[in-house]
Structure formats: structure tokens, C-alpha cells
Amino acid sequence: MTIEKHERSTKDLVKAAVSGWLGTALEFMD
Image (tube, rainbow, N blue to C red):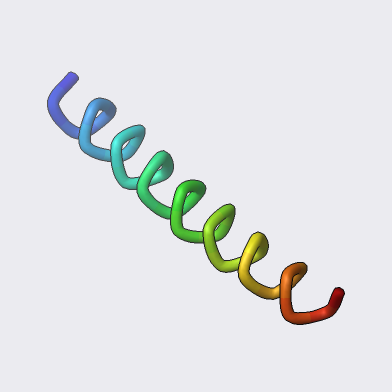
């Protein structure tokens, strides 16, 4: 259970980082 929770939070962290990076990249592309 602990591992699953850690994995999910890590995935959310990565998703948030990618979303922020993509948003910045899209702004630069515009």
C-alpha cells in the first residue's frame, strides 16, 4: 500500500512537472 501510494504521488509529480514544462514550451512556440 505504501509503495502504491508513493508510486502514485511520484506519477502526479511527474505529470505536474510535464504539464508545467509543456505549458512553458507552448508559450515559447507561440
